[in-house]
Length: 348
Ligand SMILES: C[S@@+](CC[C@H](N)C(=O)[O-])C[C@H]1O[C@@H](n2cnc3c(N)ncnc32)[C@H](O)[C@@H]1O
Image (cartoon, rainbow, N blue to C red; front, side, top):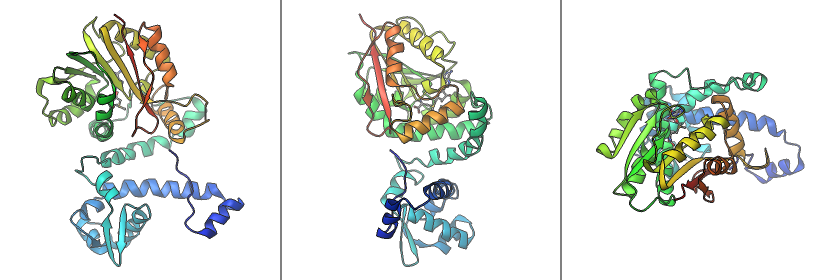
């Protein structure tokens, strides 16, 4: 997936074809204002004000407690992004806004957009990262509210993809024990356990994440079938021949190559014979910069905010092979914008 300039008239189309349009001006200005407008409309609750039906911008402003004229301008931007329609003076939510942005929608990514406020400050340091190689390992600046926002944001994304991951990862017949490394809110474990009635899962997470996401897991009502364990996957003992399934989703991009290799070896030892280790993550294109705007941006983002960046599916499979596992073919996730499941089986 990529974002690019889309002409809105034949005249603009001709301008683009002629090569006379200074594309960086529009890419940077539209990009800058588009991101912040989406963030603001979520934070200010303007869409929730429209949940029950069309309203004028003055009425939206009155309900949201915002200033009428800037509210109208912001609503017009959001309408240009097609999350609102406008008839006369009345603004209405489009189906896309109801589905993706409205608080409380089962597929809402509103919390993920609120997480952008933290990322907004981080990306301001991109030049430092590129100049010096410094990165913000371990999210040191996150306070309690930051951890809660982060975990809610991750849950919003996990709700979109977990059922597909659980459906497409085959687990051993009669699987009973699952370990979810860096599983945060535990929703991926919830999806596996709902699919396999005999399965119970342990979600191994950093203590701050457990504290922030325990209420989110409790809301799923899984009781003792999905439980948190506070720890550190990089140093904790994962056990020996005790898990039928080990998963780790959107976590290995936080770890160095050495840490990933070591973790995979400890997982291989912890799996029962026939057990499955599934790594789910963005797969970096094999040709650097060759394809995939989203994966290239993710690679840069994770390089800046953790220690490594996105890995290729091939690299993940190599760690699995070196640990004595038998890798399966990577599976691309339908909604994952470049994410794959790279699973491997412990022989025996
Ligand atoms: C991007 S989130 C992914 C969360 C979840 N797996 C999902 O797919 O929604 C990465 C998670 O890895 C956790 N994590 C990072 N380092 C870890 C470590 N050393 N041990 C356990 N968890 C870790 C973070 O706390 C965070 O919740």
